[in-house]
Amino acid sequence: MQPAGRPNEPVELFKTEVSAWARRIGVEPREVHIRPMTRKWASCSSAGRLTFNADLVRQPPRVRAEVIVHELLHLKVPNHGKLFRSLLRAYLVGHASKRNDQ
Figure 1 (spheres, rainbow, N blue to C red):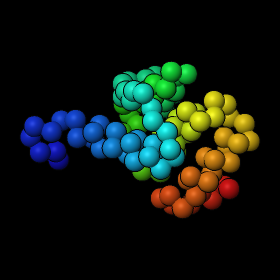
Figure 2 (figure 1 turned 180 degrees about the vertical axis):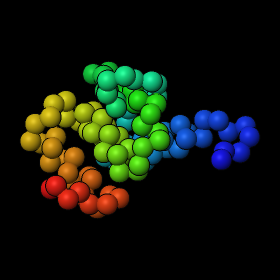
Figure 3 (figure 1 turned 180 degrees about the horizontal axis):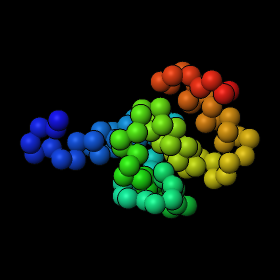
Figure 4 (figure 1 turned 45 degrees about the horizontal axis):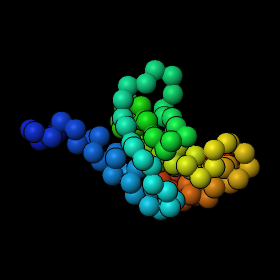
């Protein structure tokens, strides 16, 4: 249960996670937004604006990390090619629980 007066605490904690990952990856998003989205977890614009689905803040840490890192990496690599996939795996290795499918 959240203390009174802190209705956006999950959102602020999520934004803190985004900032921590951005520092680790070495990127600076111009804007970070959280809003309801119907078809995807997040998006990254060519102008550096990251938009995350509001439902993501309630997902397990591993899911949040995968989506955050995925979008932040698009600030370095705009496509989903080999370099992107290699970087994604490298940043997520050892984070939370290891994936069994890799």
